[in-house]
Structure formats: C-alpha cells, structure tokens
Length: 227
Image 1 (spheres, helix red, strand yellow):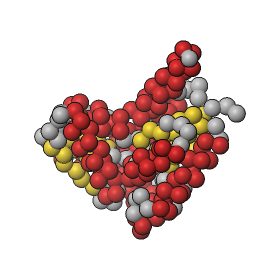
Image 2 (cartoon, helix red, strand yellow):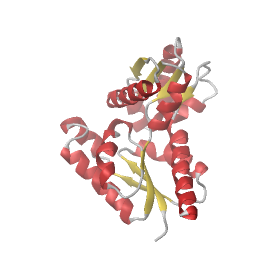
Image 3 (cartoon, helix red, strand yellow):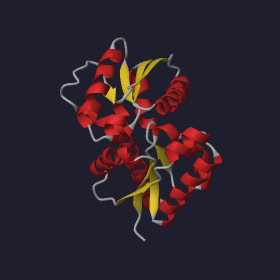
Image 4 (tube, helix red, strand yellow):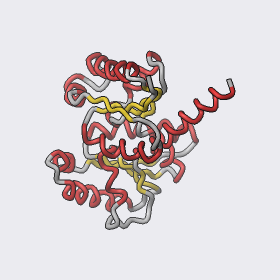
C-alpha cells in the first residue's frame, strides 16, 4: 500500500486551505482526507476531550493508518488536545495544525493577538502560546477576539462578508501587537488579501503546518537511508 499524508478534520471549512498548503509543500505525495462533522457539536455538548470525542477521533486515526498514512495533520484548532491524548496509541506522527504557527508567533515577541471565528478556538490557542512562551522564556501579553458572525457567513458561502468581518477585527487588534495569529485554518485566506494592509505579521496555520509535515517526512527518509 502506498504511503500518504492524512488530514483529520472536524469541519469541511478546513479542507481547502489545508489541502492547498500540503499540496504546495508536498506535490508528489498523496493527500487523503478523513472527517467527522459531528465532532464539534459533541465537543460543545460533552467536552472537548470527552470519551465520545476521543473515540470518534481515534476511529479517524485508525482509518488513516489502515489507509496507508505515514503522518497525519490534525486540522481542528479547537480539539488539538485530543492529539496529545491519542498520540501514544498511534503508529505515525501527528502534527497539530496550530503548533508551528504559535512557535513562529512567539519568535516575534510576547505581544500576540489571537483572532478566531469560534470561541472554542481561543483557549487552545492561548494554552499553546503560553506553553511555548514559557519554554522560551518569553513574557506573554496575549489579546484575543472572536469575530461574531464570521463563521456563519462562511457556512452561508459568503466568503467576502466573512473576510471583511475578520479584517476589521485584525486591524483593530494589531495596534500594539508584535504579531497576529489567525486561530483557525478556515480564516487563513484573510492574510493573503491585498486590502488587509497592516504592518505587523499575520500568521496562518496551514503553510507552517505543511512545512512541519514535510520536515517529518524528510527526517524519516534520511533515517531510512542511514539505518
């Protein structure tokens, strides 16, 4: 069975930006998507690391393993703790989509703005930033905002309204920040817009996570050749 890269999703909004980023980073690799759209509702009702959420994620990972995955990218920012809990039971490495972005953000300084369109994405983003800042000896001064109405606009296929709502909050939050992180893959397209026009770095998770996946694959290839 040919080896591939698995993308593990809890929402279809993450599919396009993560697939595009991975294809650009790894054009020769097959990308296979696994999704369970019930996960966000169950996490909201029962907790983000409840037994039902963990079981459903584990089934996705097992399907990916059986499908030939050599590495998986977990794309849901709100549920990344599940990756930490399940990782010891998996036979391939798992990349949490936000981690490389948060590491890059802290490299710019401790004044970090977090922008999300779902409130459930804020705490996981904050926790990752706090951990990375602590490990690097950086004093974190984090500010966060949830863009009301933007996620619904995305569901309604009104990408322009979604982007305008997000950009308005990004511009307001950027004052006094060293960097801004867009806490969900579904927001990533905003950073590339010419009309955003802010002076601080705006970081998105898909390209940085794709680069981390590529690094893991390259390390594995080198280890195989030198073993």
